[in-house]
Length: 113
Image 1: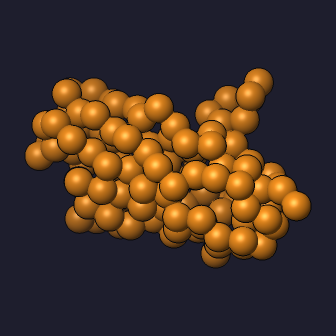
Image 2 (image 1 turned 180 degrees about the vertical axis):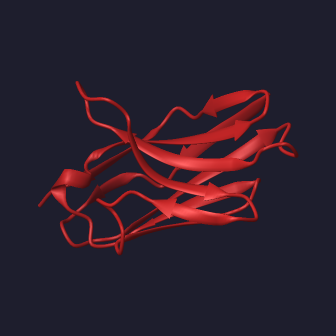
Image 3 (image 1 turned 90 degrees about the vertical axis):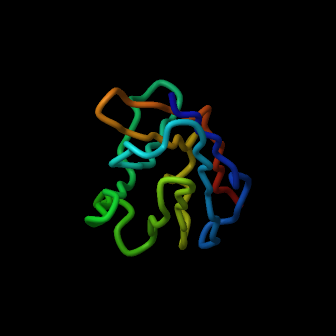
C-alpha cells in the first residue's frame, strides 16, 4: 500500500506561481511512476505531468513551458508558473507500481483576481 498526501494549493492571482508537494509513504520501493492530474467539477480528471522514476518527465501540452515536475519516490513536486484561471482545479497526486495505482485526496488551486 502507498499513501499520498498533497499540499501547497491555494488562491493565487493570474500570472502567479504555486508549488504543490506530494508526500508518499508506505511501500515505496516498487513505485515506477508519479504523476499529477487535475479535475474541475463536472469534468473528467485531466493529466498534467508525469515523472517516470530514473527515466524522464512528461508534461501535458496545456502546461508545457509553465509547469515543471520533479522529485523522487518519497516526494514529488509540481512547480506552477504563470498560472491562469483555466488552471483552477483540484490537483491530485498519483503513484503507480506493478500492484496498482494510488491517489491522494487532492489540493485545491484557484486562480482568480
